[in-house]
Length: 153
Image (cartoon, rainbow, N blue to C red; front, side):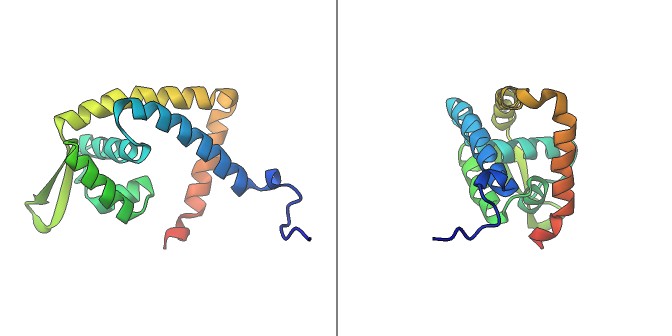
């Protein structure tokens, strides 16, 4: 049987390697966040909402999806869960009644303050082997994001 890929070995595929690294990193974060009853997606969206809100932004589900580069339907589901957990509030925008603004509750902001050191510690451990190349690694990731924004359109 003939192998149909241009790669002789899956380890030659940047996409496959990125997938594997992402899965390993997410498993590590998930394991640690489970200890404080948060999923990785909940952490990302709650923290992003807290960050944007702290910086004076009007946070909507659309803005949250754009900021985190995630699917709007997933954002909607996770926001609903975060609201149920008492971490986010949804209120009509007084300037535009059609728009729903999101804001972290005191409990939500406290959860962010608890979760951030956990995730930052995971990142530090996970990426420690490339510590001297961290800036280059981040530049490559940012370049990939910037060059591939058209994928969402």
